[in-house]
Length: 193
Image: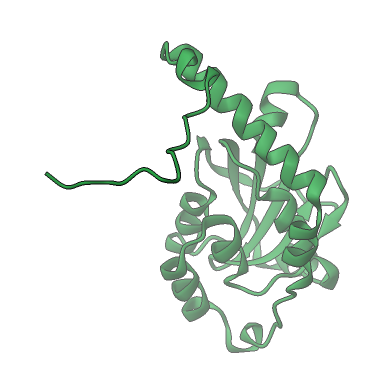
């Protein structure tokens, strides 16, 4: 997807994508956001995901690393950890030209639901969306495909384990992770005082 260079309005590292989605909605941004996940920040692998907005409402999602768009690209974005995000303004005409790519479209509230897990933000986004966009049918196949991808889920678990181990070491708690907690005896009785 060829995105024209817009006017940079904000650049920062965020822990939660919901903060970016909310800022775009509050500012009624017409333009796009470029998300660069923590892995790309560490390994400089060029992974980037683009979310376009029309008056603050998400329209397209595109993952440049996998060349996937729409709900499938949202599933790719759903990795834990911080992301560097840049918000750009574009003219309504330039954004409209991008939005002709139907395969990359998502229902208005889907990014808030899947990336932020924020029902209030999803409801606000639906309210702000034009009526013709509300008919966009959510494609459940992206979530189902993600949940069926055991390798991807295991990779996320492994990444979380490594992050927990790294933080435990930083905080001097690595011994606490070495031994698993002992299981209580099945016949043990719990007594109150």
